[in-house]
Image (cartoon, rainbow, N blue to C red):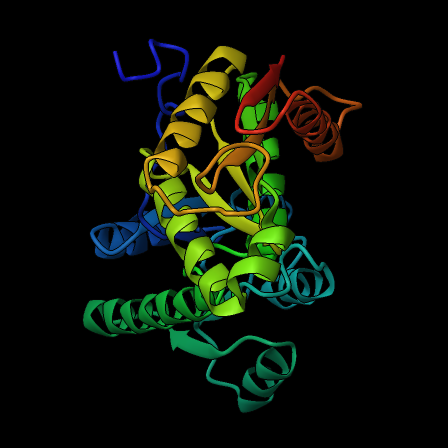
Length: 314
């Protein structure tokens, strides 16, 4: 049992952290051979035709697609055209696998947005090197994207990160039928703190509060966010109402324990937080707004009841 008394459920079954690579070819032997060559670098996903490839690209969001050109029905060029026309898949890197040595075909493919060609029959070292290079580039891009999602003052995730993260978790929990928890957090009487103690002291207080909150995100996919100003939020996967309430109470204690003097607070002599906790199992017809509104409503109640507390609902 973890410290949430079993109210934070086990991980999603069968999740694989390796980058996904989609291999598309109408020849099963080609697919098996290519997959065997690169499976230590990535998690290969196989598609035998264009329709299947488009479906899997949307569903799995691979980092890279190795795409056969000559396939019956929808050929690789048409698959690439459709991938690039769909905002959900337009950003995925495409490399063509081709037996063609015709430069006009090569030019067509590159104009459609593919970034490279590998000629069949391909040499295993070349295939591995190209895939490895693309996955390294992907990891670097993801790191840069992460930096763009970090709040400069506190070093934790920012609002942009919250919006994307909540959408992703909502989709995962909708599919798995598991509860998703959310905490909305306000630093109590922060305007008065800034007025009395000055903005440099206010910035320092926010940094210490953010660090205390982030320390309590015990799971890899828990996300603490600076929502804006003196507001924070925590996305808590697989967490029901009692689990969210308990974590909120621990955050209140942790911020109290920082003992940051607050000469202008009516909630006590130290800097404190108010927390609204909410959890629900996502269902069709609902949206992330239901979760945010629920947590916000309880945050408002926590303030109305005197601050320095958690109010939860589920």
